[in-house]
Image 1 (cartoon, one colour):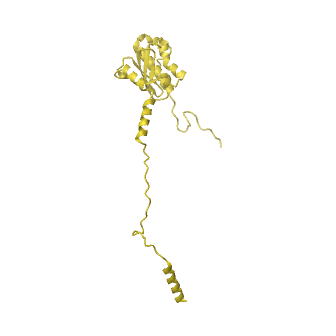
Image 2 (cartoon, rainbow, N blue to C red; image 1 turned 45 degrees about the vertical axis):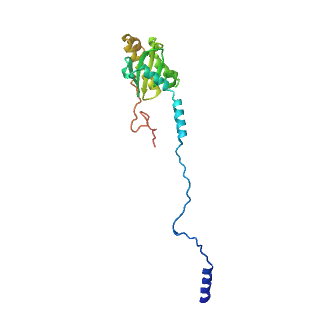
Length: 204
């Protein structure tokens, strides 16, 4: 029995055939090399993006206009007023003109989104004195929202009109245009949901 099993093992080993093309490094793994693709955009696409951005900027003509009309910047102008409302601050410059209003290098109707109430805030001081077609208004405004900025511009225009003539104080003051509105949002209190709103009371 032992001799027959040994002879069967020998015959099975002899039947196995090994390939002569065996790698010299049996543990080495070979991976196919693929051509890497760059994810960065081509220079041609970058140039087209730059050109479209330059064409789409609507404030460039007004920026050049403001620079030519206000040499030296806002601070160097003689008729200037500063208005504040909530978190908004507006610096206003008046110049003799046709009644054009430019806010942050944009037309007032465009900047204030055509809102009639906000546009009225801006025009009330000039209309009160009958100057709506006599002065051009240049504004730099920042902080807060458009509503607060519009009311800050109104106060800035009224203060700038005082530098035109001291006689403007009486009609502007009678309309309340020289009063700084100090109302701001009340702060939230600890333990409450907002400034005064408390959580719902539960008895049990």
